[in-house]
Every structure is written in C-alpha cells, then in structure tokens.
Image 1 (tube, rainbow, N blue to C red):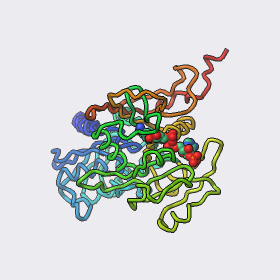
Image 2: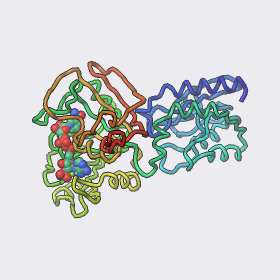
Image 3: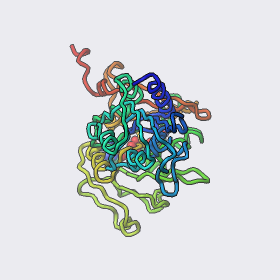
Image 4: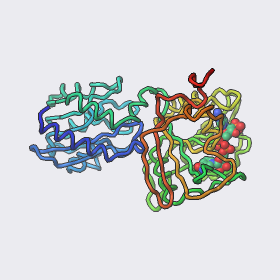
Length: 394
Ligand SMILES: NC(=O)c1ccc[n+]([C@@H]2O[C@H](COP(=O)([O-])OP(=O)(O)OC[C@H]3O[C@@H](n4cnc5c(N)ncnc54)[C@H](OP(=O)(O)O)[C@@H]3O)[C@@H](O)[C@H]2O)c1
C-alpha cells in the first residue's frame, strides 16, 4: 500500500489501541475509519465483547447509521479503513455482519490491515465485498504483524474453538486472601471495583459460580448499575449439589436464566422445578473432585452459545479450573488491607518450584478507588502448576 494508505491504517490501529482485551476478548481489538472524498469523517473501535464492531462504530461516528433501523445509511461514507477484514458470517454472532453494513452504506473502497487469522472466516468477508464490486486493498505483512501484536487474547483463543473464553475473577487483600477463615468476603474490594465487576458480568455470556460461594455469599450474579440498566445480562451457571439451595436465595429474585450444573444422576428439587420451570438442569459427568468442568464448558458453548464466561469463585472452583488448564485470563481486585488466615485465591496443589508456576502476561492495570485492578492473560507456552518440571527431576 502507498504511504497515505499506511498513514490511514496507522490511525486505525491507534483507534484499536483504545480497547482493552479485558473487555473485548475473545473478540479482537479492531479499529476503523469512515471516510468521504478522501477525508476522515468517523472513527471507531470495538469496545467490548457483544457490542458493536469497529466498522459500525465508525459509521455511527460519521452519522452514517440509523439507530432505529439498526442499519447503515447509504451515501454518507464512500471509503473505509479497518485493521481487520470485516466479518461476514452471522453464525454465533451478536451483531449483524459488518460486510453487510459496508454494502448498505454504499462504500466503494476498503483498505484492510489484516486478513482474519481464524481459518473459519479467513478471506470470506473480502471475497464477498469484492464480488459486490467494492475495491478492496489489503496491506502487507507489517499490518498483519501489528494486528497480531495487538491481539494476543484473540489469537490464543483460536486454539480453543469448542469452549468459551474463560476469565477468573476475585477480590483479595494485599496478603492474597479472598475470605476470612469464617468464610466472609463481602466486601473486600471497594465500590469502584465492584462496579467494574458488574460491567464484566454485563459483557459476558455467562457467570459461573461454585456451591460454596452460593451458600456463603448469597449472590444475585446479575449486572447492576443504577439508575440505568445494562442492555445485556449473563446466564447464571451454578455448580455443585442442589440439596442446600434455598428458595429465599437472592439468585431467585431475578428472572435472568439460571443453569444448574449437576451430576448425571441428579435432578432439580421438586420445589425448584415447580416454582421456576424455566430453570435448566445441565447434567455432566463427574469425577473424584466434582463435575467434569471441561465437559460443562463445552456444553455451555455448544448448547447455550456461551462465548465468554466470567468465573466468580470460589477458591475450590478456581483450583479445579486451574488444574485442568481451563482458564484464559485472570482479573484480581487488590484491596489495601491485610486479612490473614488461610483462604487463598485458589485452593489446589502448589507447584514444586516457583519456576513451574503458571506465567501471566499482557497486564491490564488500573487504579479503582483505593484498589488496584490487575488483569493478565495466561501465557500459553508455560507448563501448568502440576506438570512435573523435567529440569528438577534427578
Ligand atoms: N473474594 C472473592 O472474590 C470471592 C469470590 C467468591 C467466593 N469467595 C469466598 O469463597 C468461599 C467459597 O469458596 P469455596 O472454595 O468454599 O467454594 P466454591 O469453589 O464456591 O464451591 C465449591 C463447590 O462447587 C462444587 N463443585 C462441583 N464441581 C466442582 C469441581 N470440579 N471443582 C470444584 N468444585 C466443584 C462442589 O460442590 P458439591 O460438593 O456439592 O458438588 C464444591 O464443594 C466463600 O467464603 C466466599 O465468600 C470469595
């Protein structure tokens, strides 16, 4: 591409930079420009999972989007610049395909940074647009590399197309404790941190919670922000025996979907199925330490279209996921307190040597009130904490 095209793509990559993987994963960070007669008239980036894609954001910014019809307005924009090829498939998507939005807008020229590395989509959007008569130009490998550098979470998750992207979240004191020895954890973190957790719930397809947490904390597991409500709510998935679940639990105060993951022989208590007939009993095989979480996550992906899941504890559930290698990222809200006791962020066997610890990378750090929020991606190359390290074996 020529130097002007390179300059435009750099601007679009700069837009993508405004997003954080914590909010977009497993979707990529993408930036877009909407242009008319060679001038940029709209900027956009994909801000969060489940939200509008960068192309639509740029069309909106340019005044080329009709919110009532949820459709592009023709003739306002004639060229678009996007860091990633526009999506063209509707399968599993929460948004209409961007290729259609570009056609509706009457775009004549498209400049693209990277071809979609997902083999299920690679090049399909570009072919569709070329066939429709749009002049499509794709940049050289420098742009593909820049896209890849910006998108470690998206690229890593392409290896796991049959399960959701899994984010573990917890609040802890400075000494790493997530509850008192008596099991009390409300509240360790401050209001700003708790508000962000509501944001993370709202952009997740599901929230996962262990029975221990359910009984100790009595959570609602909904996304709440007063006065305005969130447009999306997660499905709520609970794991563990159902015998101790009470009708008075706060989970039942809202009608957002509830999925009870339990053993193959289990069923919902009669009172629960009678009072809440829409509640789902999802039976999965078990083993010595509880339910087979890999099967559970695959079922949630395939049968309930869960592409992103937020795991809200507790320590045993986190420990099982960690041991099974079923996590993509962690987010921790650290309060400036010392709690003492033995309730760690996750319970499970430790590694034999610190060099065997699971490595975390690509930190997203933010001050939230008095707390420090740190989010990390799991480094895919490293061994799991329980994998024997050959270098230490005699
Ligand atoms: N600070 C924070 O951010 C935070 C967040 C959440 C919770 N907490 C605290 O953590 C405590 C609860 O944590 P917890 O560790 O006791 O309980 P938990 O992890 O919430 O739940 C564990 C239960 O889940 C069920 N389960 C089913 N399959 C499992 C599997 N494969 N692996 C693990 N569990 C499985 C089991 O119930 P069955 O035996 O019935 O199958 C197990 O007893 C509470 O004190 C809560 O306040 C703190």
